[in-house]
Image 1 (cartoon, rainbow, N blue to C red):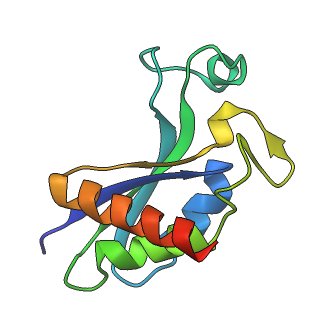
Image 2 (cartoon, helix red, strand yellow; image 1 turned 180 degrees about the vertical axis):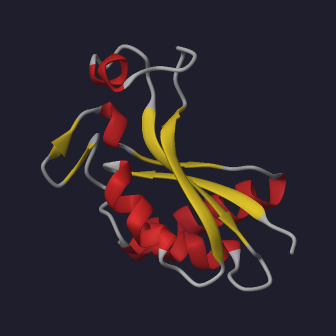
Length: 121
């Protein structure tokens, strides 16, 4: 089985992880922090809002069972990307909406999906 990785930030990583973990074709999920300046930050470090990290979920998936585009659809439909630095009751830069891509193809697909979402209002 050939797997790929996708990484998404859409609020508190525990809830986001649960959504992706239960999808058919997802092999594994892992939570952590990405996009910041400090190596191996703790939760307390990230909460200072000084590291620049986002809470993220790394999704390992089988592209023969679920496409990256389908994961993007799940990402967009399960949070509000228009609220700056918050999701529900969670407030802070670490809860921002963000996609970290792992290939040029993922970058292109993510940018196209964002444009589609922006046009739909």
